[in-house]
Amino acid sequence: MFQKRKILDILARHADAQEAIVVTGFRRVGKTELLKHIYEGVATKNKIFLDMESPVNQRVFADDNYDNIKAYLGRLGIDYSQRAYVFLDEIQNVRNLPSAVKYLYDHNNIKFYLTGSSSFYLKNWFSESLAGRKFLFELYPLDFAEFLWFKETQVRPDAGYEWLSALYEEYLTYGGFPGVVLAQSAEEKLLRLDDILGSYFKLDVQALANFRDNQNLKDLLFLLSSRVGSKPEIGKLAESLGVSRQTVSGYLDFFEQTYLIHYLRPISGSRDVQVKHLPKIYFGDTGILNRVAQVSRGQLFENKVFNQLFIRLVYGGKLGNMKENIGYYQLKSGAEIDFIVEGRTAYEVKTAGGGFDVQKLERTALKLGITNCRVVSLDKADKKLKKVIYGFQI
Image 1 (cartoon, rainbow, N blue to C red):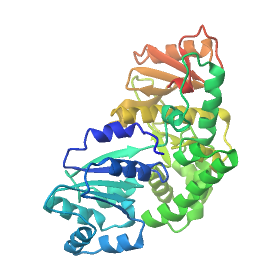
Image 2: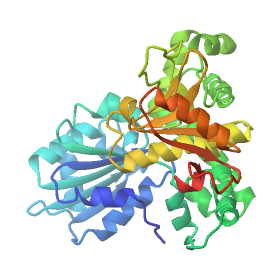
Image 3: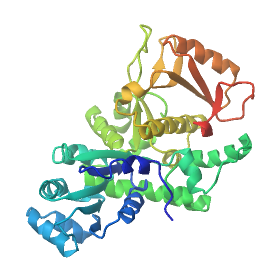
Image 4: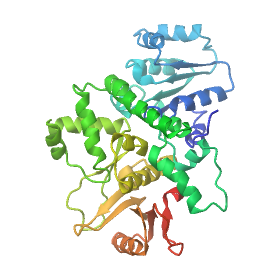
């Protein structure tokens, strides 16, 4: 049974546009299920769904003679005399595919729906071919509302902290990959997380990159896990791995463009800005982070709050310029704000938030002219503290 995703409403607004719909995101984040659901909802028989992990389909779309591809689709039932719908899943498996799609798009009345596992692929092989011909969307692990949908759990009006907190702890520990959320036991959840991570290195890394040593990639990921929420320096990472700074930069860029990590960049609004303008680093999913290494509860929670704020901006259509819409703030004195969203709301993450944390946050935020402040607490806080919220309230 398909569980609704928030991105569906966004995609529906572009269903009648001629442009191709491209959905990208981390492996196993739900792209295939989403594509199949849209396919089943298209009210015409003049449509086709093709899995590009199939060797047969790969061979067909690798053909430089695009008329052969057109003929192949015709044999499968596509009628070019009327509007057709072509759904292609996992397009990163065929490097030649963007050019083929461009040709078919330009010469026929076809609405394309495409999925791929990497913005790395789209940036390096895809962008120019379909310039002006596509709308690009990114799908991320479930936010907490979607998590509850998948758990088929409705929040009662009288739901208290204890009930919601227990659900949030599961979400925090195992993350938001759909298959992991649906797994019934802790053991099965861990096995699925291991499979996702293993598939990433076996399939995505091999298909999209030309790195000589996967072990260095894995070692770097382990080093990053202990630095979640901090500002890792490339030079120190390179020294730890025994490789060049350029190599580490390439690894980090690949991790970011395949959605394994995200950067959070500093926001400067005062002369008393941070000493080093280095980005912080967060994992794309706390379940993956937990499997790479055992991190502190505080680090895990801070990472999850970042994920939630980030996804909220994505689905709100406000992540066009990430530097302006979400960042962190740090003074030379050491005072810091974990997250500033859209330049008007400051968030500080604490495992046990209290009144002192609220006061400290308000003083620092005032330097930026921000008065809307929230301390996000993992543990239960005093009900009188109206500016203390919980992760499940984001």
